[in-house]
Length: 201
Image (cartoon, rainbow, N blue to C red; front, side, top):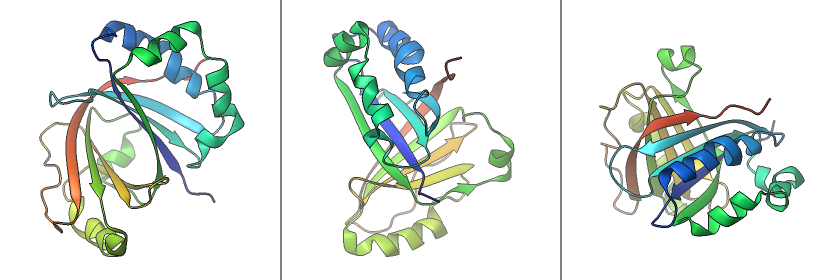
């Protein structure tokens, strides 16, 4: 079976796009259309809970990490609406990243809950190539303690950049409290659920 992927998008409205306009477009047009692409199974959006930028995250689980290279996904650009063509250039940021799934750590409550978590912790790490194997072992042993759902993932286009996602029911869990190596740069963010996107009928 092919490795699963994650399409991960950071976005920031900036001064030229109102938040209401941005969310109406993303919630009702942009994200639902991506759910029509075979291989994209779900979409969920979160808003920053830490007053930092970028303010928005969207995530799409995919059956394989090369989903954006397929004809069905590429066709979305050629059939984009006039609204989308006019809005995207006005955004301060729309940064897409594709990640390759490595492993998942779950708690019993996470297994029983099929809805998106209310809170999301996002940790990005840059690990030198010669330390990746050691880092993977450390992460599995130390990093997910007390977390309901952790998804360590490795970026498919830059294999030694890591993304760790932590799904929580409440916003009082620590983010990356364990230290490892000074060579590893990290950034930790907190987000709150905005919307679970529905597949178009």
